[in-house]
Image (tube, helix red, strand yellow):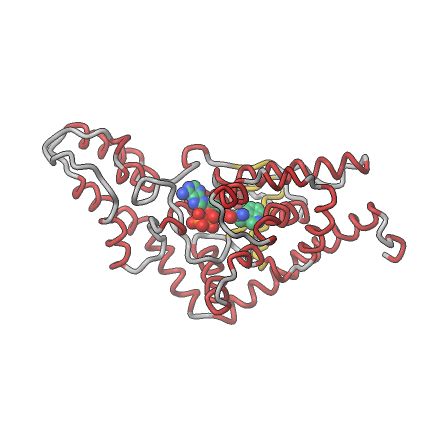
Length: 326
Ligand code: ADP
Ligand code: TRP
């Protein structure tokens, strides 16, 4: 069974990315799924990123992957744009994709409803993501809840293609969403996201991490009064990180009163350090070795490309594109 996912290199990972998606990559690896995890650099182009920043963020995401436990010996870790067959497949799949399916995609709908100027790259985004998934014949796609619609689009397109040729060429992928952490709240209570500036980063400096945790928005219930943990952003993040007994203990203290949000934030900061510091140390060590990092991406991308070329040959043969020369 194959598991595949990608993250866009638009910064470094935050707790939403980790608990919502990335941790599942590692869980799949432990369960011996054949893993394909990539840095989704083509996907960032629709925002016209600064080239230097894009390059820097590409290495950042690779470091994050390795730091939280993806192992290049067990999983194929690669760079999306090193396998250009994905663009070819997206181009071919466009012909089996009704316009309406793309027009219903959240990212496109949201932006058009706000009358934002968008480019074709953004419109086309779910099709490229479909190609990412189908090219590697992935069975499961671990993602956060906001990506579920995109995986459903991939299922629809795979089904339309298979039906047209009456062949099971593409595997119909399943999204894998960890229900308990489907949406990780940010420091302001909305979904944690780079675009909302409400993140707690996995590998921020000590000072930034403190600022992010202490900046979590809470209500004005006085310290001595009882508080509802379900309405407390600090608790909602704490329970993702801390062992269950500690989370239950915090909930009980909040309910009892005499325990302030400041106390809860201090406990959260300590828990974030305890959880992520070993990964942070590994990341710092890895960052000292750019040759190793380049090697990981190079060999992973070569391995991914071998699989991709096989699928593209099969697709071309299936649709009648000079199949006889292969
Ligand atoms: P961002 O919203 O910060 O730009 P991305 O869109 O790059 O994050 O998301 C990368 C992965 O992390 C996706 O699988 C996405 O579903 C997941 N993810 C991002 N934010 C959250 C969140 N707050 N809760 C759960 N999953 C999330
Ligand atoms: N669209 C995903 C995001 O915004 C990233 C992504 C690109 C992806 N291609 C993928 C995720 C294929 C899973 C599978 O986070």
